[in-house]
Image 1 (cartoon, rainbow, N blue to C red):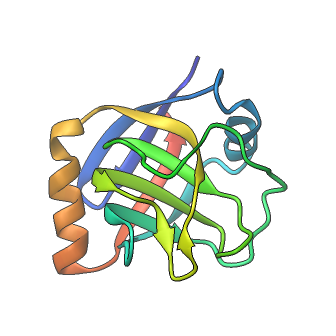
Image 2 (image 1 turned 90 degrees about the vertical axis):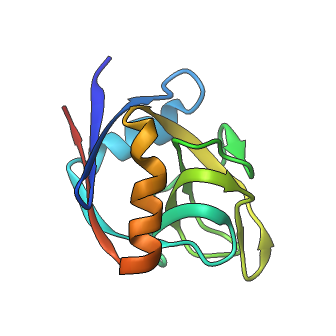
Image 3 (image 1 turned 135 degrees about the vertical axis):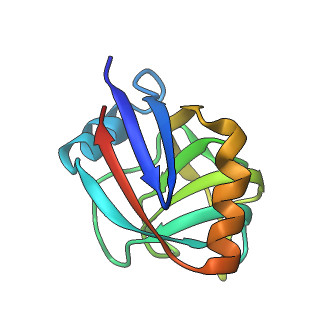
Length: 137
């Protein structure tokens, strides 16, 4: 099993893929690695950052969906009633959009650096968009 390295602003985290729970989402995301973008703070969901992906279609349906990702959970919303997005929870989250509550595919979980998640979230909230990069460690 490979380890996913996530660099968000000045913070570096390691994560594991949730291969048994979301195998299609993991395989699809792997095809897009390395994946670089910018994170912004969520608008409706609570304590999380997200990557808006607009109309990007990963060809996925729902697997291992959650509306309440725990801190360190990374979810991919495959689109539908709201735009496609990746969300990284750093605190209490009820995943939602302007259309209401959503559920996304929990496909990875941060395993190291959990004590820095709040700092990453607050930096994004107060200082704006931060670069983020996902790659195999």
